[in-house]
Image (cartoon, rainbow, N blue to C red; front, side, top):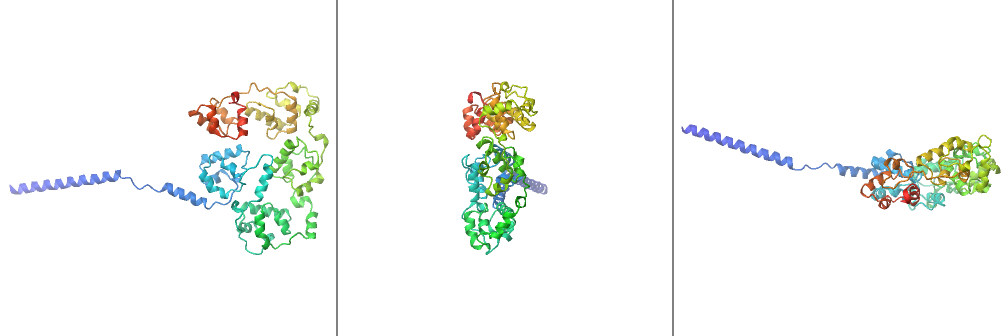
Length: 465
């Protein structure tokens, strides 16, 4: 009997011990499952990684970056898309750091990290002096845009023997070094003298002051070297095979064939159309265009033909009268263009008036995107159109904009906003803001667009809203 009691007590003791152990283990498991684990340092590692990458950035021109290169700088795909759209809004290229900073996809902290590496002038000057001042500012660039940065000069050297990599080791950026080598090749493979070396637009006064004591070149070019350089043909100097040309009939591709870049060619055309009202009338008019250097003008001068018959008259009545009686076929036109509406004119009528096929297509394509012209200047400003012919047309034909669709920012269809040339870059912001603020005045405050863009947009809004 006593033995049975002892076994029963032992069993109860074992069961109690097992139950306590199970409860203890369950408690420990529950506690561990509720206790937050140390989070992996993903965010910190990413921040450290981006920061480390930024320290390795080389000087760069934001106008030359591809989308993938913007991503490598730490921007998201959406931010990159916004930056690329903003680039198109400002005319296809960033003109200054100040302009780039205004892109809302680039935060102040991000811009502060990138700013020392950006190869752009600090500010963009007024429209009349924009290009000239840009060149002046660019001439004063030094590595990382710091005028007082000391160059790493190895000692006495002859710049004729330097490669682009050698100039980079001295302290110039890759882009600056490449431009210096191009300038040397333009001179015939030698800088010839300190004087010529100093004239390289990539070398600022501060750069030259530091380099000058170490340069193994004569102060000025020997007479024999100058005669040899000047005696070379224009083709040998620049690779351009010059022929007689009329600058008033030369288009973008024509100027590029003369050795100018696309941007320089566009500047020359804008200068001719806007500043000179459509025509170069004297050689001095051409020489005054600031993107044409004195050396370049001297090369072109023997080949320039200024035919007075190709001058655009300052009298619009004379232009319209002349157009009325000429056409692409040489016959008298059948259409009375004084009664034609520019928002209804057809492709065939444009050819009859005298436009070439490309200009006619560009004008009608732009009109379709806009939904109709609301002023005649839009026609003249159409990209890649014959400006002189456009000027004659708008001085002859009438414009009726009564049928052009107009909306408010609050009720404009999304498709219209996203496809209209004047609204598409602000469409997403407009659509976002009007959800909570369906008031045009408040939306304008949020948009903060430049005055010139706002003026264009308001032309297609009801009651100037």
